[in-house]
Every structure is written in C-alpha cells, then in structure tokens.
Image (cartoon, rainbow, N blue to C red):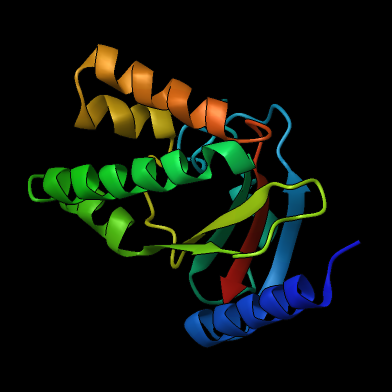
Length: 174
C-alpha cells in the first residue's frame, strides 16, 4: 500500500508532467512484451509502442513516458550510470545532431520514495520523441563506447532494474 508521502510525490510527478508537456491524449499504456520496432524506446528487446495507434486525426508531437523500477541496493550505481550515459550522449551529440536532440529532449524523473516492493521508480520522458531516431539502449551504447564497455554498461543496467521490460505510456501532446 503506497504511503501518503509516496502518493503525494506521484501526484506532484503527475503535476510536473502536465507542466512540462501540456495536455496529453493518452494513447497506449502497457508493459511491452515482444513487439519489435527498430525505432522504439530504450528496452532490451527493441520493443516499441505501435506508432500507428495514434490515429490520423490526432495532432501534436508524440511523447513517451518509459518507466523502470530500480532495485534499492543498485540505486546509487544506477544514478551514476545515468550521469555517465548523459555525459557520453552529449559528447556523441557534438558529432550527431539526431543523438543530441534525443538527449536534450529526454528528461529523467524519479520518485524519492520507494514503491511497496522497495524499488524506486525512474521515468524517462521523451518530449517529444525525435522522429527517425533509434532509442534502443544497446544501439546508443554501441555508438558511445567500444563493444566490451558497451556490453558491460548494459549488464550493469540490467542488474539494476527489477525487470528488463519497461512500462510505457505513449501520448500525443496538444
């Protein structure tokens, strides 16, 4: 059962999302399971929300909210990993404007309070999603680091999260 403090924190998170992104039309909410798309959000199986679920009469850019739950004993290491990934992404972005846009348009949100199972919620807000960009984590790591280092970082990530399948919400900003 969530505590009052965690409910307040998540309510504030919802308020922050509204302020950051404007009004959303929620399109799809699910934990990804085996759907494949090379331009999908960062997950280990290159899974992606179906882009065609938004409908032709929707307007505004697509926004993704991708959530992972980080194990409590791995939280500090996970934060360090994110810091180093963002630094590497910005360096790579100096040579690739598409990657620079991906990192500039992705924000990291987190709940300071643990979930009932003890994990911590970390959300990546892609606002908006950069069209034609590859958000696959392994792809980005392979662009940032030599193969052995990329593989090592990816395994650190997998060890830090409760599940390699994120929760994904796809929205359209009005």
